[in-house]
Image (tube, rainbow, N blue to C red; front, side):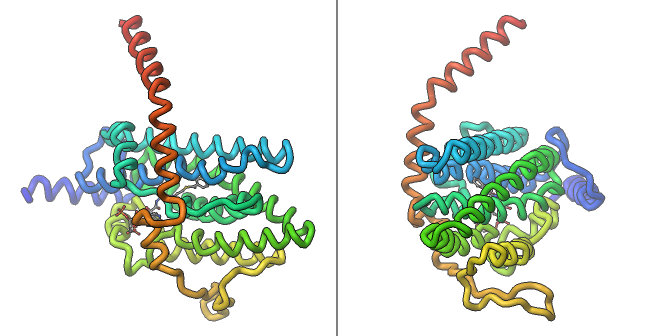
Length: 313
Ligand code: BYC
């Protein structure tokens, strides 16, 4: 490494340590750029693929009110994907390349969206637990060092906390409903609890990306810290619903002032992130199909933009 590069890296780190934001035109190390492209684009893919399990229930929502809320929520997730793709594009990669990486299996998306939504209670559980986990992570990402990513997070967090509350409202209704509805709510909690915990990623001592992510302040809290934060706020919410968290080892620890839990099934996690979860194939096939079907829309939009540009010149 040249002395000049060494100095640049040092200045960059000093700037980050002073809590300054890095902006698109600024000099940045190649690894910093790549780390952000990976994380932001995977985040964007998660938002967009995450529309599928919920979209499955739009036509079967139990009332017009529930349908309108679900439609608005899913549309919000699409919007989050768009802000995030735009943030990733400011790092010099095109949307087409990002989608190609997703289709080729080079880019990941959150493991949690590879589980099926079997009934209406799952829509409640997704809002409560999946959006609840997502917002726990995303609140910390409002302080991420890359400016466009941090700014996208502010808007996304406001919407995600509404999503969390709409999910909790569904759970309240079901948990206080008929015995069958209560049973459905408990069953949904049983199936979504562990996948929600897996969203935070591997334990800190297994997480290869954390060191650099924290050094560059891309990541502002570790996987285990965020997971614990989520557990500590969610367990009392389950108690309020009168539902049982499906973890026989879960107990309050007065010494640490937090909940102790059982171990996540990491084999299942690794299976799901390597493409072998219950719905991985279905999710990707669907994304590829609709992407292909939407080619004419992209072509028309590009032609319109080119025409406008020509008129302005
Ligand atoms: N699923 O070293 P690690 C939403 C990967 S969606 C899949 O700890 P890092 C919503 C990880 O990428 C919100 N892959 O990595 C939408 C890495 O693989 P690569 C989604 C996972 O980056 C619709 C490897 O495992 N939120 O709100 O330090 C409806 C080792 O991990 C997972 C985000 O995307 C996983 N669960 O930490 C409802 C947040 N966990 O890339 C709701 C942004 C780990 O080396 N992302 N991996 O091939 C992050 O905060 C971080 O990237 C992670 C992982 C905490 C996910």
